[in-house]
Amino acid sequence: MVEIPEIKISKNGFSESETKKIFADAGVEWETRSERYEKLKGTIFEEISGKWWIAYVDGKPLASQGIGEFEGVYLLLGARSYAEKGTKVGSRLTTHVIELHGDKPIIGSASGSAGKHLFVNKNGFKLVEVKGGLVQGNTDLPTEVKSALEVAENRGGIPIRKIYLRMPDTWF
Image (cartoon, rainbow, N blue to C red; front, side, top):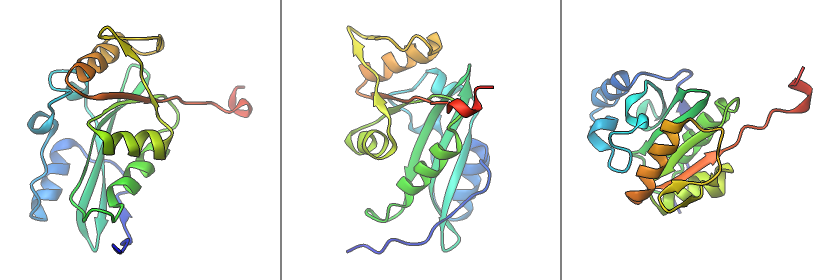
């Protein structure tokens, strides 16, 4: 059985270049979006600015989760974990970042079954339906985001979203 370590999560997000430096200073080669994106290459997910939260174990950065804002929605910019499999360092960080950003819909593309499990099964995301290469419904999404999801799905990604629900006591 793998021991679940205590993690410390950065209080604020860092820029992509700051995140790369933090990992490099710890001897970890962290790739930027332009270095690692395949399914979202050349889309709005690669172009917007974002912030990355970092999970530390014993002072060493072991996981990151990026998120950015675009036209009233949040875009997931990538989750990456260097922790031992089964320690849940990355998934706990992702859940934390999602909880920090509950005021708008969160949109992303899971890169495989592990990502689908993390976002859909553990964090309440729904699959975005794509038929004939086109996103179905989701009329609240900016056109560039829908186009990016269509590109990702065509490249093997799994389009996902978490709908923001505003509680009635905050309507007025």
